[in-house]
Every structure is written in structure tokens, then in C-alpha cells.
Length: 216
Image 1 (spheres, helix red, strand yellow):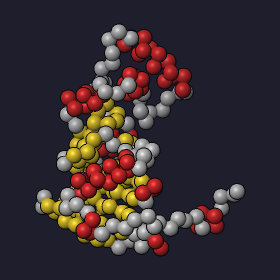
Image 2: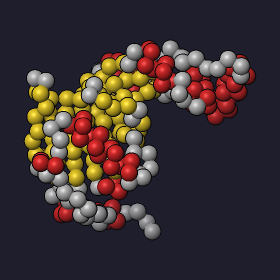
Image 3: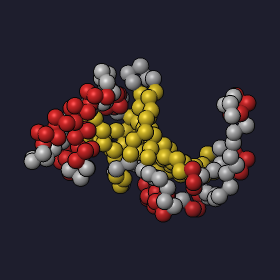
Image 4: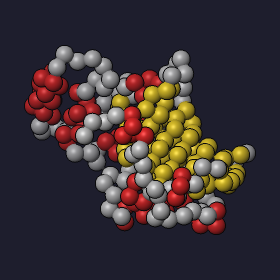
């Protein structure tokens, strides 16, 4: 099959599994997110914590990639990465981000916008110490987002660190740690027939969450 513009124009799915009414949604959007996340876990969706993280560079050009949610509570949404990566540099210059979760099996999407802050060293170290040793080593040796000569460069760095850390473990590098996205907007999207989707939106106004319905 050849992927043509005509093929793409006719590629569509009519959503019909559920609906979303204002009365169905908790007054606290973080609580509502936790409920939907539990639904995704119960549905055995593959990696339900996968999320798109969108940032912007100093010229305002958007940049996006997939990361993993590693914590959520009343304060916000947490993830961990290399501070010297492209996203780390962009967040340093412009500490705002957008997150998107998409659970196609449930025909649901959650969009989040907010300010971003680094987590404290102790929190980052506590999480780093729970990671598999191979992931710890990868975080140390990878100069994320930088140009490298080839795959062998990384593999040699991994073997060197394995030899050095065989008996004493791996310490969290200073260039690696966590961020928290403190939400100012959260939208819950439920797919519906004929593209008339349900969209319930929360805006944080003067410290209070305001709930509205948006047109699809």
C-alpha cells in the first residue's frame, strides 16, 4: 500500500466508547487526572505514563518529545532528565511547558500547561537510586542531545563505568535530575462521534480552578 495524501485524508476513526459531562469530572483536575490514569492502568494500556513534553527555545520555536511521568500530586507532574539536554536548556531559558497524554484505547487525551521548576537534589537522588543500574549508568555516560561519533562511543563509556562502579554503585550525576510541571491549565478530552468531542477545561485563576466546556 502506498501512503498518499488521499490515503491520509481518508484515514479516520469515529470515537464512540464513552462521553464526558461536566458532572462526571471532579472539581480538582489533578484528582480527575489521577482517576483517568487509574483507568488507563486498569485497562492495561502499554506505558500509560508516556507523555509528550513540549518546550520552546529562546526564539520561541516549539520543541517536543516523549518522556515518562514519574510522579503526580497536588503540586504537579514530575519527570526526570538530563539538565544539559535540549529540553533542559530550553526550560532554563523559558520555564514553561505543555504535556499531552493520549490513551487511544480509551479514546482519551489530557492536555496540561504550566510553569516548570527543578526538583530538589534529595528528591532527584531518591528517584535515581531506585533506577536499574543500567539506567543509572546510561544517565551518567550519555551527553544527551549532543553530537557523538558513533554507537561505539557510548558502549565504551558504559563499559568503562561498569568496571569503575562494580563494587561501589553509581552516584547521581550533577547534570541529571527532576522537574515538576505546576499546572495552570488542564483539559480532559473524550473522543465522540462525528468529531464532536467532549472537552472539559480547567484554568487556575487567582488560585482557584475554574471549569468550563470547550467546543471541539
